[in-house]
Image (cartoon, rainbow, N blue to C red; front, top):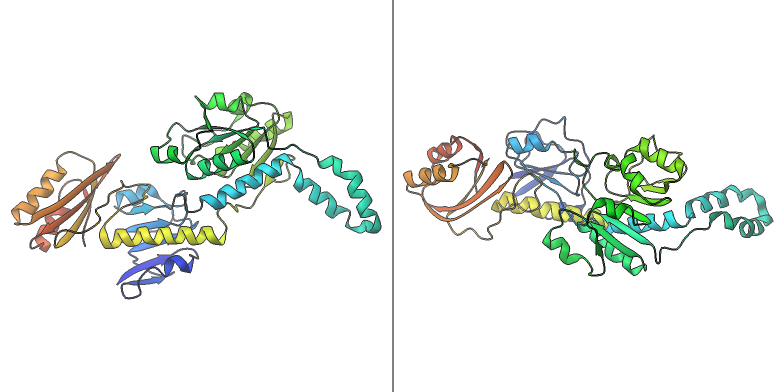
Length: 388
């Protein structure tokens, strides 16, 4: 019986995919085989030695101790694209809120609730204070053209906007999702200086933390509006407030409010609603569970943030062996030698690497004894050995 621990409420549409005759799902386990998590912060958690996988029902994995997981051979999955439509819709909402002072107008109307019969006249008189601009014909810069960025870019075209995108790491798969009408910027500086709106869609890494700072704001057109539905740490709040004060930035819409930005004129704070739709949570849960099941049952890895993609659809031997190891020379040679010495035949083998980590799926025929398994585990550089 495989034990699955949930650290947050996870949609039943996902959890119900774990068969009851082979899995036990609960929020309390001392030694789970896998964990399904959303935003729970795991950095102070002890990771049990038998933990094989962590599935993040969402895209960001800042709440998971990736280095420790990798060193213990724990595969960390995320669910890219599962919540993309929900975030896309909120980004478009942010664009509209930045263009038309709907928030200010609503707050003002609420403030005259005690005016009785005068309300209608006051509304007509005061509405000019909350005018704005149309999106049609304006230029939108998309920084990061992954699943969400591509969807925002394509939909913005339907608003009649001119869209320019920048992503130095654009994958072939992502490129196929983009409309041919989207202009590709030659560099970030070029994009920043030529757009009226910016939507940020990059991950929060050491290299991107605070990347939108005084230097970047200085490159932008005066009165620019910025949407941040990616991560709060991408924007330097101190420099942002200076840019708002000077008029360089007119509006900043963020899904990651902190105490520093609350009450600041020009900032529209949204309480992290990006992926908080019923459909998004269901999609993320389903994807997280399916990836976890495929790994536990077949050893396949898809959408891992710390291990390479590695997939063999069908076991062609009597047993399947998976090996996680440090990406150093001669390990495959030593593995095959162990199998040969124990008269075990290799039917199929797939080896993939990602940076300093490698992963192997090996289908074999023969008597896979404890002695053979222990010899595999003793090979220098091997992190985990699992027999399925």
